[in-house]
Every structure is written in C-alpha cells, then in structure tokens.
Amino acid sequence: MRGHGIMSALIVGVAGGSGSGKTTVARKVAELLKDASVASVSMDAYYRNMSHLTLEERKRLNWDHPDVVDMQLFGDQLAALASGAAIDEPVYDFTTHLRTSRTERVSCADVVIVDGILLFWDARVRALCDIRIFVDVEADIRLIRRIRRDMRVRGRQLNDILEQYLTTVRPMHEEFVEPTKHFADIIVPHGGKNVVAIEMIAARIQERLRPVAT
Image (tube, rainbow, N blue to C red):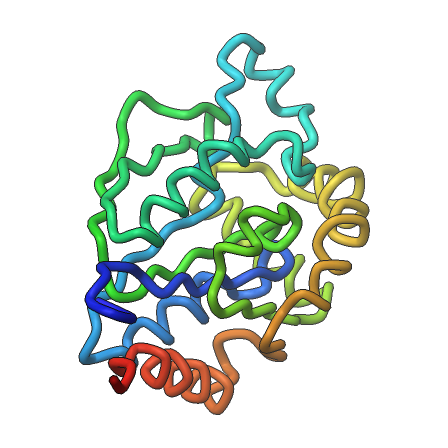
C-alpha cells in the first residue's frame, strides 16, 4: 500500500551483465526488507517461445539480443504488478531453450524486485522501475561465474559456453547492456559482496515505503 490508499508496488530494477550477481544482490536486498512483502521476477523467464525451431537452431540463436525477449508480455506483467495485481510468470527451460507450458503465480507485494541484463534497454520497462540499480562487475569475474552456472545449472558444455560468450554474450553486452548503465540511479560495484551498497539500497526502499504524510 503506497500513496493515497491506492494498492501499488514499488518496482526495483536490477540490471547488469551476465554473471554480475544481479540475482544475489536482489536476494540480499529482499532479505533486509523485514517489514515489507517482496516478490521477485526474472527477465530470463520472458524469452520468446522458439518452439518452431529445432534444438540445434535454438542453440545458435543470439540469446543476448533484445529481439529474443518478449518485451510486450514482460512490460504488461510488470505494469500489472506495479498496479498491485498478481501475474502468472512464464517458466523457461534453459536446457531446451523453450518456454514450458507451466507458469508460476507471482502475488502482489509491497516491493517487486526484477532483474535482467536488458532491463534498462526498453524504454517502457525502464520507466516502470521506481529504483534502478546496475550491478557492475569485471568481465573476467562475470565469465567465470557464467561458466560455473551454465555447467552446473543449465547442463552446458564448456566449449559451447565459451563459443557463445565470444560470439554473442560479450559483443551484445558492449552494445546493449553496458550503455544502459547511465540510466541507473545506483551503480553497485563488486555485486553481492558490496554489503554497504546493499544496506543503502534496502534503506532507500524502506524510506520510499513509508506512508505519505497528509
């Protein structure tokens, strides 16, 4: 509940390169918001459904380009959450590169923390974020984290991960992700290890949640 008795959510956007620690920052901020309800949404769930392509064709797609994200659906659902409504978030399978038939219910909350590498690229999505955070971590650290995650969680092979990084991840980061840093209200170096920044973000959110005096 914010403003003049109108149910709404504070949307906190967390952007940054692949492997920068966006999800860790979002989780740690959420843990500090003891007196507020918090919902989490990942932009990764909104990749377009490419079921018309074969698995090999899907593997060759540039998954770091804005065109592969269903920005319309993502923006619509983020707007719904901002207005205090619940949504059915898509569930994406990163092993098959397909959107599944399942969805996950995301209930309305005081705060919605949403993360994604391209979060600030789309003007409509960017405008929906009340607080914009960019997690800034060195490229070599991001690559190491990406390798570990993709091998452990997504069942990828090392050679495939490195090939994808060199052909799409790095150039797309330089073209579409890094330039959006200047849209951020807060830049967090060192990712989830930056305790001071995380505490400051949580304090700012709590301040924004206080009822407006009348």
